[in-house]
Length: 214
Picture 1 (cartoon, rainbow, N blue to C red):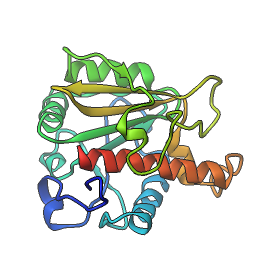
Picture 2 (picture 1 turned 30 degrees about the vertical axis):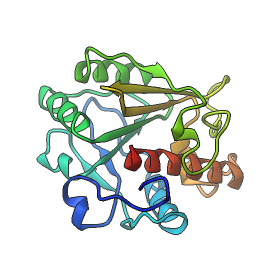
Picture 3 (picture 1 turned 90 degrees about the horizontal axis):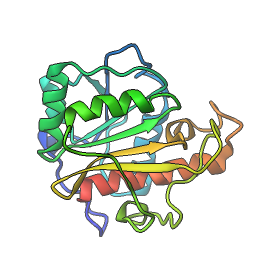
């Protein structure tokens, strides 16, 4: 999608099908499968609120699978361990350096494992904070103070980090906010309420729109 809200054609098979989000099925024993309704809720919201032509449901893909390259937008989250094989590392680097985008949302506990594995993918890069002025916070909805605080696992402000390869943001990492819980909504997390659900949907929309624009 460009800044006018018109959908661009993503890479791979999405050129001839509806946009979807590919959830990474990673190794290591962590709960890659959590927040079961989050992405489907987001896809429905994107269909209703933007010009992105979406499918009705997310898909799942292993990093070692050649089908990985059919999906321009990758997502992962969890609480525990993450383990990438050598094939996973090679495929993910190739994907991200050829137009792919990864959003990882820390569901409280994935941080040290995710950082360790991404260092294998991009040993030459470091995660850097994303400033509030970055276009991702303003491209569709305006978040002048950066990421909203969605689910209260821990005190402190939300944090956003990125890996930039040749100047392009290839991996967006949201921490201490748990947008994924917010996407599930008050039916699953009633303590967060409808307002947090809406904030989660809007910031996630920004992430998707940014990924499809830049």
